[in-house]
Image (cartoon, rainbow, N blue to C red; front, side):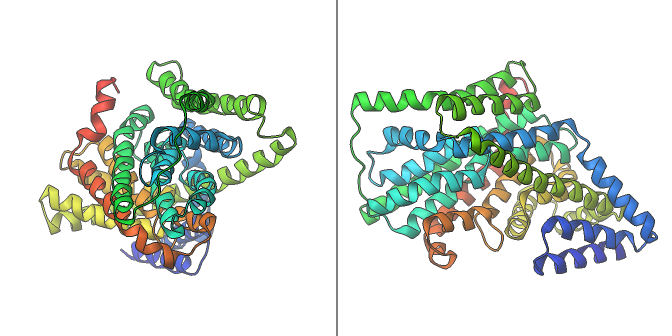
Length: 430
C-alpha cells in the first residue's frame, strides 16, 4: 500500500502543479518503484515498460490517423461537409446549430479527432452563426458538445488505445460499436437545439435550390467516400485497421493536395512536422501510462479497487452507476489516453464479474471520457471551442448545461442497454 500511496500523491502533486501529464505519470511510477528498488533498477524498469508499451503493431494506426486528420483539417474537407449539412438541415429553425452538430458528426466520421472537429467546424461555424444573429456562447456550446462525437464514430485513435489496454479487443469491432452511440449522441444534441430554437425563436437558414444542393452534395461525396473506403475495407477483410489508417492518409493526401488543391506543396513539411509532434505526445502518453499500469499491477492496486467496489454493493445497476461517476470525475482532470490505459485494467475485471463484455465496457469508458473533453480544468474541446468562438468558459458554462444533460442521458442508455454497442459488430460477424 506504500507504493500505491506514493504513486497517487506524486501524480496528484505534479498534475496540479502544471507538469505535463506524461512526465507526471512517468515520475510517479518511478517514485513508487524507488520504494522497493534501487535508483538504477527502478529507472531501468520504467524505461523497459515504456518501450514495451509502445511495441504494438496496432499503435501504428495512431500516427497515420493523426496525419490523415491534419490533411482533412487543412484540406477544405470541413467546409464541404458543412455545406452538405446545410443542405440537409439548414432550413430548420436554428438551422446553423443543427449544421454544427451534423458537420461535427460527418467530420468526425472521417477524421477521428474531437479537437480537430472543434477547431475546423467551430472555426467555420462561429463567424457564420454570429452573422446570422446567434448568441456567441450558444454557438460555442453547440460546437463544444458536438466535437467529441468524432471519438465515438470511427475511425478513432482512442479505440486503438483501448484495444491495447484491454488485451486485444478487436479494433474493427470497436469501430463498429461506436456508430450507434455516436449517432444517438448527435440526435440527442439536436433535440436540445430544437428546444432552444423554439424557446429563443432562432433564425431559419436560407433555402438552397435543387441544382445548388446537387452541386454541394457532389462536391462532398469524395470526402464521404473515405468512410466507405476505410470501414468497408475493414468489414470486408480487405485490410486491417492499421492498414486502413495508411490508406486513409494516401486518400486524403490525393483529395486535399491534388484534387481540391487546398494544401500547397510548400506547406506539407510543416503539416508533417505538426503531425509528428502530435504523434510524439500521444505515444509518450501511451508509453508512460503503460509503465504506471505495470506499477499499479505490481502494487495490487486493481485488486484493492475491485475489493473496495464489490464491498460497497453487489448490485450491477448501482455498481455501473458508481463506475460512471468515477470515470466522469477522472475525465475532468485526466487526458483520455492515460485514463484509458490506467483505468481499463482496474475496472474491466470488476465489470466482467457482472457479465459486461470488454466491447461494451469500452464504449462506456470512452463515452464517459468524451464528456470530460467538454469540462474544466483540462477539457481540450472546451478550450478550443471557446477560443474559436472568442468567448470564455465562465460565459459558455450555462448554455452548455442542457447539452451535458443530453450527453448523460445517452451515456446511461449506452451503459444499461448493451445492444446499442454490441448489436452491429455481432450482426457483421465481429
